[in-house]
Length: 150
Image (cartoon, rainbow, N blue to C red):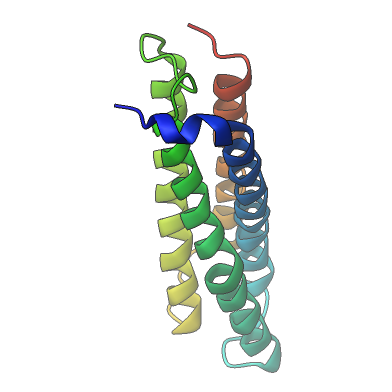
């Protein structure tokens, strides 16, 4: 199903989608890095409280809105005539990557609550590894969106 009225706005829709993705990805790259550093400070310390503020603001003021706008313009793209070749498999892989990225976002949000409530039990190494997940997903998503294999 497509909506013909969206056709003339395709390039604008793509532009705003990419802008939102860049903002979202910046947060997804940075938040786990903050967790790595947060693991190094004592619970209840001034530094820990500063990390809590930074993590909360990054998630609530940048990442959450950017993810919602990414999804909004992504859905508009799917509804725009000619934007998606429904017979191709690339967009299924891309959508799966975006769903997984959204799941990682949700996990990051849960980890933020753990730090906020001084309940984090994961070691620094966990967050160092987790920090690589958005990179791998981004590579898959970008290749699917640009090269559109299959």
